[in-house]
Image (tube, rainbow, N blue to C red; front, side, top):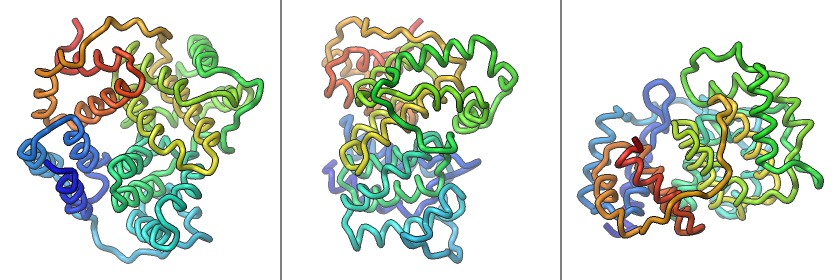
Length: 342
């Protein structure tokens, strides 16, 4: 399937609501593009789209009167989760007036403070639009990010010249968790963000982020390692979203006016997500056995025929990160999805 046809299919469904059910994110545009990138055929992609719309009961965004946002007032409605259409209109106008690159440059860093909302999916959809060079999808991603924006610290996170490494901050978080600071909030939460919020609402988390700022020398590879080793140590729904979020971060990293702001906020977000799943012991080493990409041919075909949107997106992220880093652990993630570890 030609890339243009893939983009056309994605944009033909952009009238659908960005969410379904109980505020669950519509993964259709991301999954379509991920399928294309892992080599799915036209028939496999179109069948997936048709089946996914039906299975998730995706519906058009309800028409309603919408307020009009401008540069002066759009921030006032960030995270209200009721103005997706207005945010879409706002970002469409911004891109028309200034171009996509300029719009990203001025908006990414401020939006990053709310990256945890909807389990990182505002970041993901925006990044998929950038990856695919699909301007309308990037606009939809920015709108969804603005509408689901959720801060986890009262002030933007900061970096420091003599700040901590990400590993050090993970270790501090684990020690605090072992001391029982979050024992009283172990009850189930309905979604990833709700779990993160329960962690971040505690003063001990705010103190950790304020008193132990990350080093200004932190870089994208530090986030990659943290997300990869966390997923290897405890592969679950939250660590999956951390890994795909870091993959998405790579594609917006150089689009922001203040990349250091992205680093600081992603650091806080990963620590909160880590604590939300019990702060498991993370093995900070690349110990994966060598594996040949060609050995996954059968696994790829199973994924191309899969109806599991999360598995498809994770496989795409893992493949892209493997290609960029050469780390075999990413290929093991793909293989273990198809043939789970004993």
